[in-house]
Each structure stands twice: as C-alpha cells, then as structure tokens.
Length: 202
Image (cartoon, rainbow, N blue to C red; front, side, top):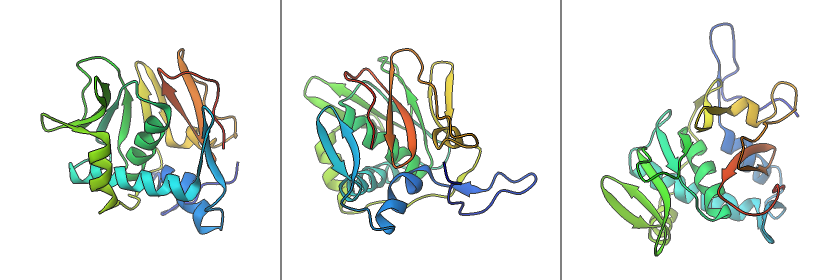
C-alpha cells in the first residue's frame, strides 16, 4: 500500500492530517480514473466519478446539520450502496461512524432504515434519503483535514482507524468483526453490517 497523501505530514508529537475519502475517491478522479469502477456491490457497479458525486452530496447534508471532525454519525442496517455512501461521506467531513442498528442509536445524524425506506434523522426530524441527497447535491462538501490518528468507524468494542483502513503501515488491512462484510473503495477498506453478499471490491 502506498503511503497516504498527507495534507500535513506527521512529526514527533503531531499525527498530521489527511482524509480517508480523499484517498478513496478524489485522488483517483484527479489521476484520470473517473470512469473506472470504484465499487461493485451485489451486482451493481459505480465509477469513481459517480461515487464521488454522491458522497460529496451526502457530506454536504452532514455539514448542513453541523457535523464536524470527531462528531459521531450512527449508521444502521441500510442497503449496501447507501451504507458505503454514508460512511465515505462521514469520513469526508471527519466524522466517526458508529455502526448501530438499535432503536436508541445516538449520533449528530442517524442514518437508518424505516418502513418507507432509508431516513436521515437529525434535530428530532426524519428526512427521506432521496430528499436529503437532492439538497446535498446543491451544496456538496469538500474534504476536511482529519488527524492522522483518527477513527473511521466503530462497532460495539471494535474500532477501525483511518490508517488501518488504508492498510498502513503493513498493508494487511482490517479484519471484519463478526457479522460484518469488508468493502474496499480506492484502497480504503471498511466494514458494513446487516447486508447480504460477500466481500465487495473495487
């Protein structure tokens, strides 16, 4: 695994800054891979350009709800592509995803399945996923500067750091907790829960 692109290189006592979403999506578009397949999930393929557009849109939604670096976003059991978009969007703004499908899941924003589809819950209100995405596409978010020792996501007692998800330092990649599937996008490998199918790869 190549070294990540550091926004600010780490030094003694300073973890530096980077962004997992930038590594997974933006860099590949910048380097001419916009039309290459970034994600293949359950028979559906998405290019880097398409996925970046969707992720930046939902990141704009998170930013509009005040989600910032280090804040928690709860992610329940949702369709695989929605889960991938939500996690990458959280990484884009520097938030930590808490995989939690319980009714009492806590986060600045909660993304979960409801009777009528996926909803985005914030400030005591539920917003349908499609409505949130339409709003987000009008004001997509850029990449936040995220500390190099930041956490990408958690599930119960398991924690996945940004660097581990990028395969740093040894390239081994993360080990999924029980019940999780591994999803890889542009060199970033993360967990999704409650979904069917095997490992997903770019």
